[in-house]
Image 1: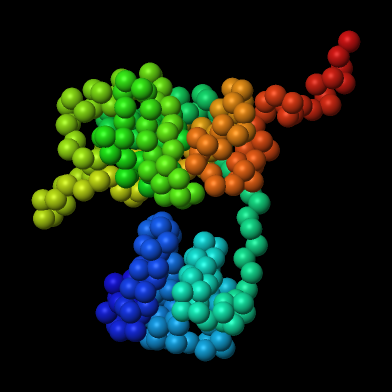
Image 2: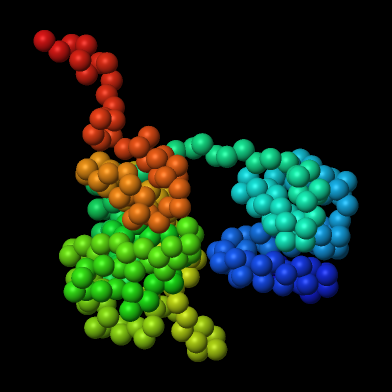
Length: 293
């Protein structure tokens, strides 16, 4: 993205406009980064800011993306479309926005680790910090960026709660802090004594100490994958999926789960009813009863 900002002057103005709009409307900075990263490729392809391109150029680029020998990921193509929609919406270019292709909503069910696999994953890290990172992702159902933004003041050991500041869904929420999990942060705070954020990243070249990054979380997951006896392909977000599914299977109702996950719409939460095996939705095979006496 830095190359596009340097080589295409108009793209810098567009990026600033998008950033201002996202800030005013309280939209996630991670979403903005994804959009700008993909739009930067488009700007470099034509050496022109995307908002100045005609419809035929946009169509040619999207066709080019879909037919490269080294095809970009589905996520790249999707974020290019969403990024263009955001640009056209902010600039009032509704005609161009309507002409963009529709992105079909993914219906893939989430990957969920069973409890044995979660225990093995939480036992895998060598250092306390990394064990706590994974434990809080699972034990509090946090998104990666929510954990990165978590402050020491957000953890209340007496009330056994964690305050998750509004990001997606635009509402703050409290999630329970399990007594099993609370012991770890207490010990970590005593030894590491972080000043502001719960978890810090490594010291940078200029000596600064910033908050944990999503890349740091991804590294921790990558280091531990081989120590879990499973063929499942999982990411940091898989721990949030597992948190939701296990709570349903342990008897939590769907509305309570919606609040804990911070979902704005119940439709987003309902997907976990398809994954869980609990209550009236317990699934079984006819073979289970075929040979019953």
